[in-house]
Image 1 (cartoon, helix red, strand yellow):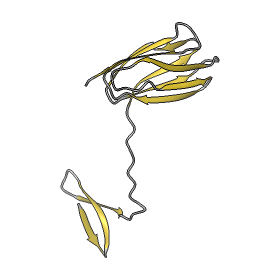
Image 2: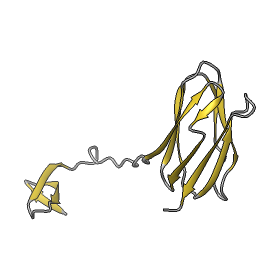
Image 3: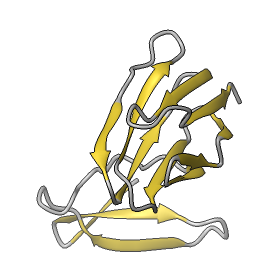
Image 4: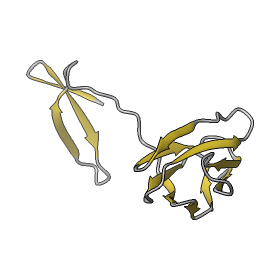
Length: 127
């Protein structure tokens, strides 16, 4: 809803109790639309030569956050993704973190190509 006060447009918001809250004037410089970040559905540690936990389940649209905690270099390469999903990967590194939102339900399988047996699975529920 828009109200006019002394010639400047103001944004008003109706509250549950029926009151109205007057916010700062709207200008073309002050109106910024930001894309909401997806909720973190699971966290995975990238430890020396294994992922912890190895398997996680999240809801569609949530994100998985990986955090490097070991001393060895590791990467993340997706080997299987649901139809229409992309096989994004994370470059080899010793520390840091990455977050990936998963928008397609199904099973995602990933691995570190630097160490045999270092694999993980994400199951994305349809909600």
